[in-house]
Image 1 (cartoon, one colour):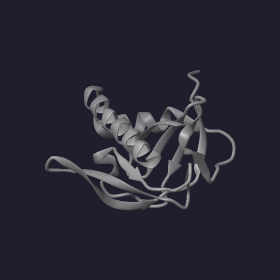
Image 2: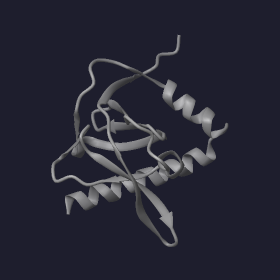
Image 3: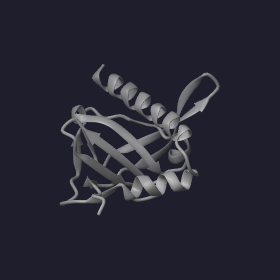
Amino acid sequence: MKKQLLFLATTVVAIGGVTSAALSGGSVSERRAKALAAYEPVGEAISCVTLSQVRSSKVIDDRTIDFKMSNGKVYRNTLPHSCPGLASEERFSHHTSLNQLCSVDTIRVLQSFGSGLHEGAGCGLGKFQPMQKVQLR
């Protein structure tokens, strides 16, 4: 049951990202470049994040997802390979029996077909890099 609730929460967050992206100015590539530049790496990458601590996820492009945690931290996951359809759909699912999402796990792109969502391409995750907001100078 917990797995299904998290799946739904991730889906809702990603769908919300589509709406906000559509309403913001600039081209898709400009918005993605801004999103990538908004944070900079800090510290060592980790292998797993605790799912119950993930508050939202934001797909940046076909290889990059930012995970915002309940404590305010942001972890960026750069997938080892491009994930077809991830950037255009901006949503994904995952299946795990643990309360962790790890670099050995696979996500599935959620695609809209007809009246529902269907799992598409499966893509492996990379490590979770702690990020900090870039300070304007």
